[in-house]
Length: 57
Image (cartoon, rainbow, N blue to C red):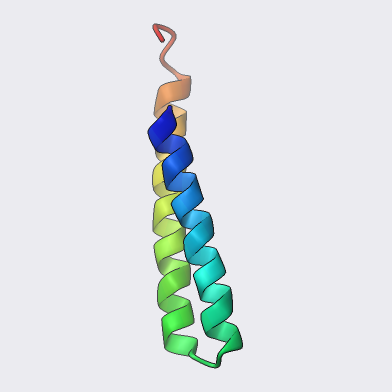
């Protein structure tokens, strides 16, 4: 379960970095950071859904 929280936290960090990059005027970097945040958030969500279905833990 800890890896799910870690991936979610990393996704939030990438979103914060994207906000800073976009405020600084770097559109390409901001878009890249948003894409990375979406990848980490999707990974965390996928792992959460798999873990939710397991009743043995």
